Amino acid sequence: MSKTLTLAGLVTAALLSSTATASIGGKPVVLVHGFAPDQLFDNPDSFDEVKRDGDAYWADYWLSRAEATVHWDSSERIEGGIAEDAYRQVVEISRSGLCNDGCVFLSHSTGGLLTRFLLENQNRWLAQDGLNPINVLATIDLASADGGTEIADLGISLAYNDNFFLSGAKAAFGAVFGVQPTPDNLGVVNDLQTNEARSLAVTPNGIPRLRVVGGGSPYLGVTKGFIAGKDDGVVPVHSACGGTSAEPVDSCVSWQAMTGKLTNQKAPGALWYNHYPILMAEKSDHNGMRGTQGGVTATPVVNNVWVNGLVVDFAENRYEKRPWWKLWGSGDQYVVVPGSESKNLSAVVYDTLQ
Image 1 (cartoon, rainbow, N blue to C red):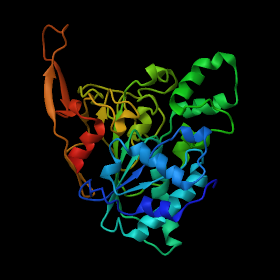
Image 2: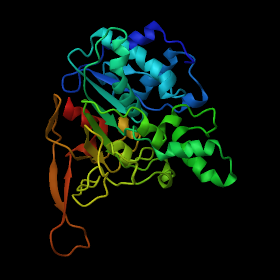
Image 3: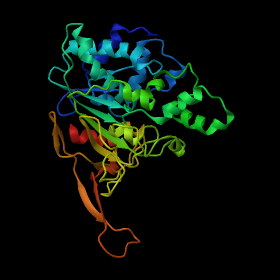
Image 4: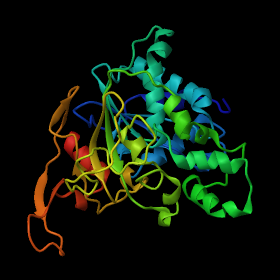
């Protein structure tokens, strides 16, 4: 690992924040942030720097609504320096007693992949220190990339091919990752390749994973042509939903579009065990889902259920809408979360599940 983990950084990352409140189902929230592109070309010198980047990642909405954050360095690999960082923080969270009565982990993007790796390995990690596993009741995964993204596949290819005619592909990769790829500056991007991500930490466990999925078009849509099926500009729907294969799909379920329209859709053939798509939003951008993008209408999918102590009960507005060109017969049926367009998607999740 290329940096020093300071005691102050670990304690701050693990213990209760004085400004936070138990916020999801009355249980403490532990955040697992996503990819930090600046770290690829400006490697952090210390864990304190990693922590500052991680706190800034969540500052717009979730940081004040959580008790701890698992911080990690995007210039590292998951089974390398990232695992070392996660291990030390998991030990401190266990020792602190924060999750003795249960915690909810909330991740975004690559944080979903790290969360899957962490959940698979925490029993072994903690047993060697004589500690009990963290009692994770469930995870909430925003735009989760634990099924990988074809943009990472593209980056690996570009790193070893400097052909002039690949300028469009380079622009797409640069829009997301903020750097032109070389064999030496890809860090966790290596783990985000679709096959690599799907082979990392695959043992089923009993912890439910609640998925929130977007389909927006940031970066002027430049990434769309390089990702299989519908996506949020970075992560394909097959990954965010928890689909068992990397197939081009348009929705998490076959009966409901991301707009809320009840209609036939191309959906994953199957979802990973214990994965529940609870919310979709057609216009939600990848990064905006963290709490910065408003004006997005959400549609509930798996709803009105009890999941390991969490009550998922999004309000529903069901209505009929007739297209202007349809002169007879019934209109199209929709289901949406009323008022969601006046909030950001993170607020819709928090206000419902708290």
